[in-house]
Image (cartoon, rainbow, N blue to C red; front, side):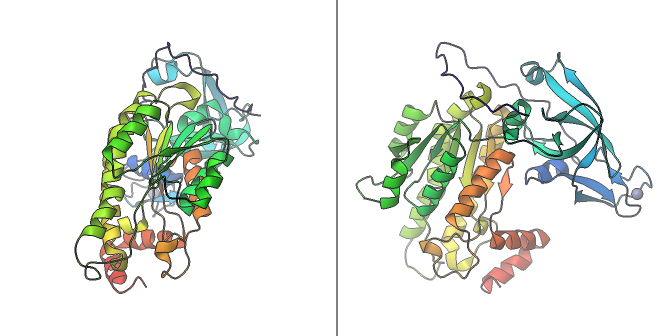
Length: 417
Ligand SMILES: [Zn+2]
C-alpha cells in the first residue's frame, strides 16, 4: 500500500531552493524510438519481423537471426520479478538526492530480461509485475515495474511522482477561465486535488456566469490576465510566477475563415496575438520561474501544458488562419520543450480534434467535449506523457498524417473526408 501523500508544509522562504540535477540522459538514436512511444504513454519494444524475437536493449539488428527488420511494437509489459535491490548510495547526483531507490530485475513473458525502477507496492521477488515506460525528468524513456494490481494511492509513490506531473497538492495557472473548456479544466484540476488554481480572465468587466461559479470554488482565485498585453502578463508573473507549479495555456482565439473568406488581416492578427504571441509572452515571463523551482520537493514546479489543435499538423482550409496560428504555436512549443528540458520541466502538447464549442458549430460530430479535453489534460499530467491527441478526429488525422502528410493535405483540401 502506498501511503497517501500528505499536504506538504509551507516552505521556509529562507531555505535555498535546491538545484535540479537531471537523471542520466544520453540515449542512442535507436533507443529514442522507445522515448517517442513513452511520450504518448506506450511501452514499445522492437520485434523481429523475420523470427518474432522481442529485443531489449534496442538495437540495429535482431540478436537472434541478425535481421535488420525490427519493428517497434506495443507491449503489455507482463512479467516476473526475479530480484530487487535498494540503492542506499549513488554517485549520480539525481539519485543521491532521492535515496533510497529501488530497482528490480524483470523477466518479461515475451522474452527479454530488463532492469526497472520499482514502484513501492511491488512485493519481494518472485512476484508478478507489469512493466511500463515513462518519461523521466531528463525527458528520456525509463522502465518502471508496477504491481499487477495497485492500490488507491498508487500515484503518490515517491519514485513515480518524480516521473509524473500529478496536479495533486500543486499550484496551477489556467490562462483562460471564460470558456466552457477553461471551466472544465479548472473543475478537473480541483477534483484531482490541486492546491490552488489561478484562473486568468481578460476583460474583467464582462460578466460571465460560468466564471462566477468557478470563482466560488475554495481552491480557485480569479486573476486578470490578458495575453495580448505584455504588461498584464508581467504583472501576473510578478505576483504568482514564483509559486506556479503547472502552467496550462488554454487561451485562444478561433475564427472559422480561410484566406478568401475575409478581407484584411485583423482577424488573423487577433488569432496570432493570442495563440502565438500570447504563448510567447507567457513563456518569457513564467518559464524562468518554473525552471528555478523544478527540484523543489514533492510539489516542485513540474509542467507546462499547451492546448494546441490537430489543425497544427496540417492546415484545415475552412479554419485556415486558425490552423496557421496553431502551427506557429506548435513550433514554439517545440522550442519551449528544448529550453525546459535541462531543468526537468515537462512540456505537454494537446492536439485535440474539433472541440464542441461555438467556433466549431458547423463541424459535424464527433467533437471533443470540454470535459473530455479537461480529463485528458489531468491524465497527461498524471501519466507524465508529452503528446496527446484527444478525440476520434485527432486520432484519425494523426494516423493519416503519420502515414503520409501529403495525402492528408489533399484530403483536407477536399473537406476532410
Ligand atoms: Zn530475428
